[in-house]
Amino acid sequence: MKTAKIGLLGFGNVGGGTYKILTDNADLIESRVGVRPEVVRILQRNRNKKRLVEASPALLTEDPDDILLNPDIDIVVEMLGGIEPATSFMLQAMKNGKHVVSANKAAIAANYKLLTETAAANNVEFLFEASVAGGIPVLAAIEGSLQANDFVEIMGILNGTTNYILTKMTDEGLSYDEVLKDAQEKGFAEADPTADVEGLDAANKLSILIALAFGRYVAPSDIPTTGISKITPADIDAARSRGKKIKLIGQASLEDGKLNYSVKPVELEASHPLAGVNNEFNAVYITGDMVGELMFYGKGAGPLPTGSAVCGDILQIMRDMCK
Ligand SMILES: NC(=O)c1ccc[n+]([C@@H]2O[C@H](COP(=O)([O-])OP(=O)(O)OC[C@H]3O[C@@H](n4cnc5c(N)ncnc54)[C@H](OP(=O)(O)O)[C@@H]3O)[C@@H](O)[C@H]2O)c1
Image (cartoon, rainbow, N blue to C red; front, side, top):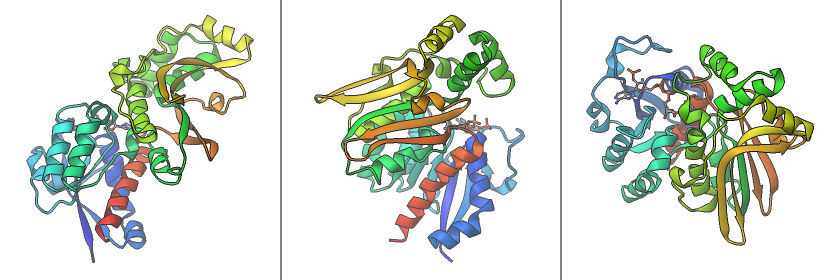
């Protein structure tokens, strides 16, 4: 039996979901790929914390070197969050000949060139499907089935928290503050919601989409970004009176060779496919010169949807390891 030895960096929401999929569906994965996934170490910070999923204590470690320097590990999966130490850990893993999978849009958007160039220089794969729109396989589509297209435009609802807030404000006439408080109580919004509500998380994801679809790197800090914290019920009503709906849209388009991009609240015609994307759902609407318009819709977060995308990347690497 062939096995792929996997080290997980992070055992929170995404780490827990990924571990569950790799263990619960190990037989299925082996039957499809011809290789069995085996998680051999898991990095966490706090050994006493209650986890979403149980793992054997023998797998758990607080020392990143147990994974990064472990000669047996083929694939390192980074699910820590934040730019550092995540970026340094990924670079070290690549330099040690390990393939890397990551869900971390903040680290990838900030250090896109360094990470992709280091992977190439070390002849290892670097895949990050889960970093944009969680469970939705949009990066694989851009890099795979849609490769024959020149991309004209990408528009996305890329952040579930802000879409949830705007949906509740629109459907229930509530204020931004009321919905944010409710979202925090239900666990849909972070205690510090700044990265979500000010559009920074969406800008990270748009930066990655631009890199893959348009072949250019635009730092998230260079993307003009406006969040939703200043949207009022009056704005929502005014849009409604014009037959429109307000959504936080990450958008990039190519016009006469010039790339335009932004993250901002946009009034969409109520009939636009993105206007019907509600609550915590994400969607990416892509126009290619040959395929025309496409929309990818699904869950942009959550342990299992995000873990599904992480595992898709792991399986891709496992297949490539067999070639
Ligand atoms: N949550 C989602 O649905 C979702 C969706 C798409 C992408 N992502 C991305 O996935 C990544 C992980 O998100 P998450 O929601 O799973 O976060 P999380 O629940 O906070 O989990 C992070 C994990 O990393 C560990 N960790 C963090 N810094 C560490 C360090 N310096 N050394 C050792 N362990 C460290 C934490 O350990 P302790 O638990 O011991 O503190 C925890 O196990 C982020 O980049 C996020 O943007 C998340």
